Image: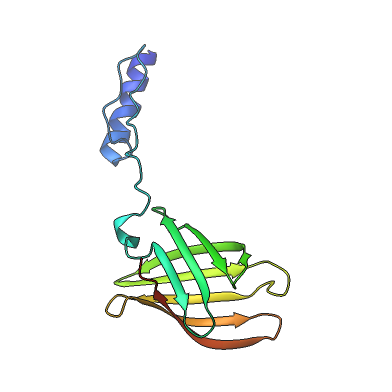
Length: 145
């Protein structure tokens, strides 16, 4: 009885496209496919890792890696290190947008909202200085190694 119910439910699930693999025979565990390991920088965000310098003051964003979901392993210096509370990238068509938020003394809530310009290999956008409640157009160039 149980076997026929399982077969009926499995058949319905397959017909509806719910199961991607055939149902394992009773008494054996279904096999789980291992996920391929993610590279430090996914191809969609491969242009981002590096050291980026803001020419108008020497501010530096260092992007070490980007995971498949766009989470950045990044650091900021002004010139002393300040932690990002949030650092992420999203791809919208051919455009990569980045968002960084600082949560440190004097910078709480300050953000960078940037886009990668692949033609000129720069990050450009807006810096919002939360304490002064002012926005500044900024850009970062890739530092030569």
